[in-house]
Length: 603
Image 1: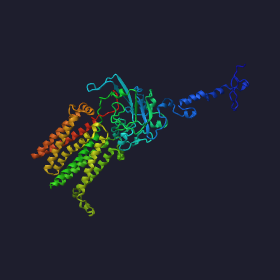
Image 2 (image 1 turned 30 degrees about the vertical axis):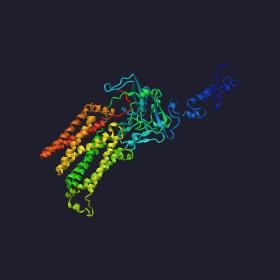
Image 3 (image 1 turned 60 degrees about the vertical axis):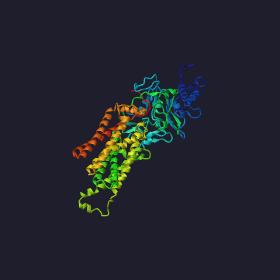
Image 4 (image 1 turned 90 degrees about the vertical axis):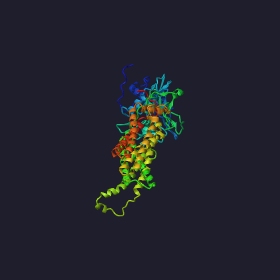
């Protein structure tokens, strides 16, 4: 038998390959064609294997359709929901704590895929310590066991970030339940970072906006797994559909140390076979409280608007009391007080935009009026300044007219007149709007549900600041305007008493050197922060506060002995000292706040 292979036909007509054992026509055998043909066909075993890998029964889906799936789908398909959420359901992360090794592959994958900045992270891995207590004497627990906890956005049913955003830069998908951040709408106010108890939104100083995890919704929409799910070597993270509308007990938490779930109703599910041990575990960073951001533009704005509103309110109260007694404040005193109040409010409101990452987008702040206290504050205080401006203009019109040439005045039609009650009515409207604005300012922080910003701590601070500084400022403006000495003395005394009362109240839980008697653990942690890292601010607040009170008493003495030098010098210094004291108090309010958070880790 010849050892030479048959010559391949050169004809364009396709020739079917023949079996090598078929020697009926040896010249028609094409070995190369046969091998190529076999590569394009599958045996029954191979076909079944491919369909089985696609996790479908044979015949339900064509092999071609299965090949359209992402290349890595075979590895993560069981970590994804089989069907989209139905009505009353949404997507959620599910974490198998027993499988999480703390390798942070999920953190790296999230960071890389989303192109985050070097210090920015949408997912983090914390650590729980098991079997050891944390005390003040031993702030860092050395435990025999640890449990790693990976966490990202929990895509809450009632997301605080969405409810608090003043420009509607958040959207919750009605089908998937994924909470997305709309970068092009964000003004960088960072209020969502306060409203989210899980510290999910992250501010980018370079971009001037916040950003957050969106469950890789674009990958999910085409059947791909989120970066964290696909990268986890232990398959500890998965996407599941969960039933919405479930209630939470007041003590329910995602894991030990986390905020209570009833605040925003998170959907993430943490699974473990060591439930009791995990529930009693302690976050590794439980006794580590970093100094919070100062938010100094907000602090300045809050102090300024509170002083402004209180000045008008106190002046109106004084005028009403004198009217009942058959007397009245000089018009010049009222004019100067209103003008000073307007200037202070304008300064404060113009400092506030320095807090924004995208101040040119600030005009959108009214969009969240239905749900956001920040929107309500901005709108109401804007109306307050408008009403106060009208009142100031009306009150100063006669003064302006006295300097206006007669030729200009003669051109004004005689039928244009200003009623005498218009200025007082505008002041009254301004007072109502101002009080509503201050209440909205307080609710911005009360709504965060942070214990140290609760109503019983926030409302006395905010309104107390106005009384302390506003009263001494009103005393100065009334004295400058030639008002009665009795009203001036009463205002200065009110400022001194209010300042002393507020200082003693703050010392009972925050400013004193010893923290004995504090029952709330968060109060204890905040006090520790104020007396250690922020001790210099605490001392300055105490010193300036007491100095302002003493200067008020000196000013009263100067007025009594009719010494212009002593009275005016001490009065001006009292204004400076009390303004500084209240500004420092507001910085401490922001910087010493502590709250429950997801477990962290030692760095």
